[in-house]
Image (cartoon, rainbow, N blue to C red; front, side):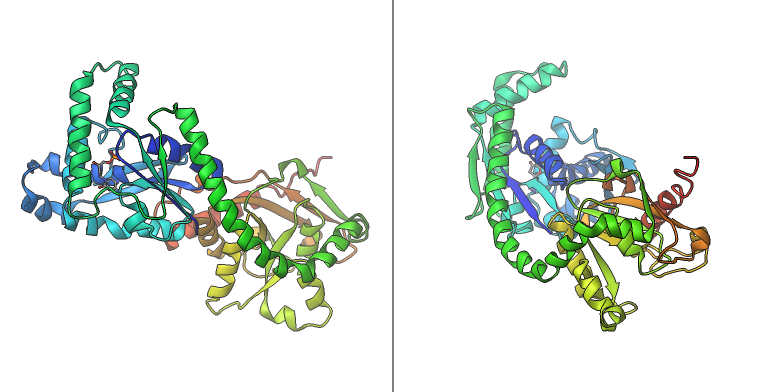
Length: 440
Ligand code: DC
């Protein structure tokens, strides 16, 4: 997973920049300040004073918070209540700053943040992301701006919302918070040694976003080039065959009687998981000749033992998976392909069902887990063959549905139930395509 850390004092523009970059890169944006604010809100509500460290520690185990993504936006829940707006007040900002200086609070929140970064491509903003939470982040930015320019921005921001606050008092509050956040013993606000400094005092918001974007592109570009040389080696043995196949694809399509519908729906770039119903091993071939993009796919280990077929499927971008065993290698490989922006085809049923209506078959939850971990969008495809009995020369309709965006799955913390729900959503979308094009 790729991690981008953005640290800096409040008001330097971290969240706006992080949000814009996350959208562009398709990563999730994690606003860690909001987590501290939620803890702060809890302490405020139960009446613990900001001076009472023992009280904060005593109440900490009762803080039941949850972080959810709704339409791509991070939402904070406290004891089941959506408090995303309620944490944005000056008094809660103060409480957040106070609780964040308590070591046990930081320890309490550490794993949640690390887990998010382990399982997702993230852009995280906060104070200690590059130093503590993601010390090996691919990109680290330390965003600063003078206290005066931050106060100025804050006053204008609030005025736009109809709230009038004085410049001097805002500046004083910012200075006080800076001091508390930088002067504390535990995880003080400071730039990681390998962070790129970006001072936004003299920049507009648009200019700041552009500058941050450039830093990210430069850094990720370097890493990608390193990865690319490894990836190319991996691809070479199959690339030639694959392109040959693409070249002869029109003939193969005719020979196999493949009719493709919904080609306009094909998602043309970025990581993508293609999910289809499965009746025969040749489904992969039908998919390969229906899509413009090159597919990679998991194939069970046994297939690699069959002469000729083994060469053919490798040429088509197959990689092996040990079904039944928990093949961590295959999962990792799939995730890394997706991370590189490739297309992976998967069959949610987990196996072939010859002669069985797909609506009658069970669905495995592996696809759900892959989506959750890769953050990829999913393209549902229905492969229609008469009686679900695949014959090489019998007509097959490959119906490409609209992509399901990652956000639509509404994942919160992953887990079996969420994977099952996601796999079911995918399969329902596949089944919904079954009658497309019949009237034509
Ligand atoms: O970014 P923010 O203003 O929402 O953060 C609220 C407070 O939380 C801030 O005063 C410092 C603290 N914080 C922290 O100590 N570490 C983080 N990673 C994020 C925020």
